[in-house]
Image (cartoon, rainbow, N blue to C red):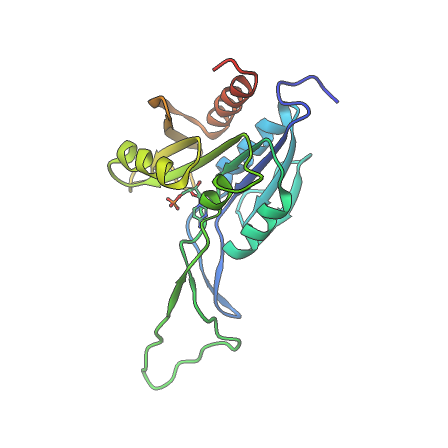
Length: 221
Ligand code: C5P
């Protein structure tokens, strides 16, 4: 065991998109690469934590030296997260699909004479909100919020609604290049208020977050 600031701690990180099946060959997804989640898991590992990394089908590989739990759908992600508790810290970086197709077809859907398919949706479980109110709630529960406008206002409301401690909000509007890109610009929201973190590499954002977590757990904040 090394003597890093998070040694002896268990950190749970969700990452990547989820895939929600339409039929055996088609799915609904989003543009999350999993880069920010992987960077956070790596930084937690480097700080000495034991890391459970629950990841959807991301386009970047998971870091070495963490426990990787691969999932496809939001419901699988929820099961994996609950199974990984207890944890000292849970960081929800995954871009979980808000909706799934209510009844995916068990056969490939076929074109039929110009009739267009209609998909019925069902709401996915909100994993962050559930863990925030769980009996085994981690000491620190942290969410992300990808917003395209009124970033800080939406994130403040989201922090209250979800019951988490901190939200890292980012502006993913067109032209920022953040979703799928190498950099992130974060508004950090806690009970104390909002702080702007300057645009930086996703690794630098991860390091800054892990330092903040270590300071909080050490009672320095
Ligand atoms: O509500 P919204 O999707 O914007 O919330 C984003 C935050 O909530 C992220 O931290 C994300 O990982 C988490 N989340 C979740 N389960 C969902 C939806 C979002 O854990 N079904």
